[in-house]
Image (cartoon, rainbow, N blue to C red; front, side, top):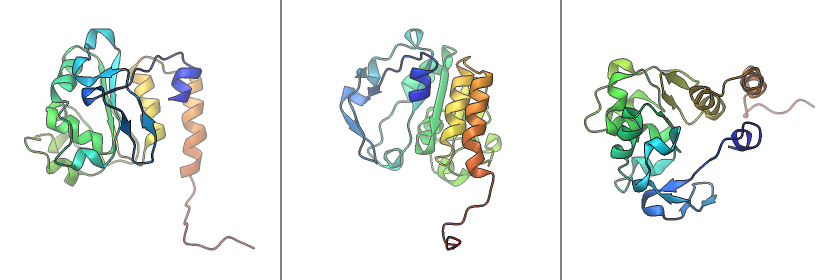
Length: 179
């Protein structure tokens, strides 16, 4: 978000079900600008759903109408981690290639028909104006969302390469540090 705002001039508008304050799993408190139910796709370039365990809970918000409205209006629709379950529930993953935390997690979603379009891969996947990612791919997710919004650039490629370097070598946290 910081790169999008500071370097690319992207306006970020936060929304939540009912417009209520949301606290992330990590304790980050978000005060939304408006209720998710009032989002008008024509006023935005895209809809990005943040992940987390809430999407697996019975109390998960149903944003299917908003997701479908953004998708049908040609807007970018993106989800990472557990939020891919919301895209699956909306039906938009049935007709587009996508990834998620796992195929099994999506299979548990009632009505999901996108099994043949699921791709098991470590980085985010952009298929047209739909971007999906496992929770382990936040950097490529951010880059693919920005590219889908038409903000791809050499600088964005450099940003992705900078952070991808962390994953280029095998890291094993269980191995002792060398003396």
